[in-house]
Amino acid sequence: MDRREFIKSAGLGAAAIGVAACAPGAVKKTEATSNKDLHGSMLQNYPGIGTLGYGCMRWPMVKGEDGQNHIDQDEVNRLVDFAMEHGVNYFDTSPVYLGGDSERATSVALNRHPRESWKIATKLSMFGPSSFEDCQRMYRRSLEIFKTDYIDYYLLHGISSGDDFQSRFENSGIVDFLVKEREAGRVRHLGFSFHGHQEGFDQMMALHEKYHWDFVQIQMNYLDWEHPSGRNTRADYLYAELDKREIPIVIMEPLRGGALAEIPAQLTDRLKAIEPERSIASWAFRYVGSFPRVMCALSGMTYMEHLQDNLETFLDFQPLDDEGKKLLWQVADEMVDYPLVPCTGCQYCMPCPYGINIPGIFKFYNDNVTAGTYVVSKGQRDYAKARRKYLLAYNEAIPTVRQADHCIACGHCLPLCPQNIRIPQQLRRIDKYIESLKQETL
Figure (cartoon, rainbow, N blue to C red):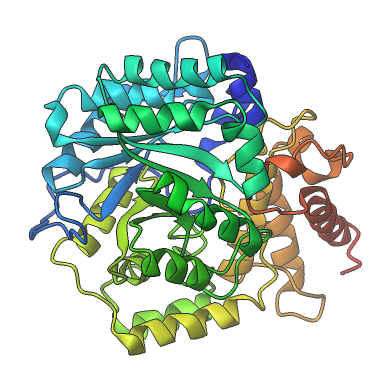
């Protein structure tokens, strides 16, 4: 499998880069700079590793002379410098993120600092049965890109079950090779990231005695604790199984793709009444950081605002007590009743063969439900004004040719979604809603 096929397999071709700004939780870039008053020490649940980790799938973009969006390397450098200055030293990427350019941009930024000051986590991102040679080539390419003779944390990417692990990584012999690389010190820690049902996770845990997983990356947040989306497993179960085996945990999606940074208005008011000065996102990060087995919580901090807010949370960290956790579980219980699409904005579904901006459509819909600007019925106050405003905003946010009504349910996106969202069905639901607004039949 060559580089183009890697990118295609992950759904992260060049067209996906253009929707990076549509990721849930993204904020408009402002003039915020690094002079914000930040002080204190970075939380380290494991000595030597900052608990706030940098997810490198959402680096800032800039339009180049060719008219296409490219990673803004100068801004990446600035973000990395500021993060490292404040104790962030774990950076997570993959050969397929951002059209294959995330590793390169991350390497450029990190290699301006001493090698011992940063830890790189990257992945064997093979999404189908592959030869030993192809797998080895991807692994060695990552070493080459990062100009290093070892990888700190190496992950088998996106495993869903023991059978999936066997067909993608074990049958070719690449896992045995990586175990030997670990013994030689060229892979310092070997683990995997997981999206799947409980049975699949149990199968991977049964292999711990054979492979001795050094760490495991799971989706965990206060919503997924008891209410996982799609084929994902309850995070309380995942955490307990890893904790009893004393396996360090890396957290992905602590904000559920931004959904926990902008929760419904009435729930926001409840949290703000308790701690008005804290951001809503800080609650979610304090939740995952309060579990001692969590080695690192990843955040894709696109802008300095993201980074500064998260640093405020993790510098002189204040863990949640049992009452705080119970409050967030209550918030999660109520969020389940909202008609949100459980999209995390990972962009694995992109590019759509028919040009549909899948994550952008889901973000627009979710944002309006969360903000209370979702048009409910003709009986609501100022219905005509709300209807007109919603339709105009939809056309402005999503170009007509990329809207939900262009979905033909080809199914290309379905196997790519780690949340197991029935994407065509959700697009039809949103299109039906939009059409009812147009026809005033809601």
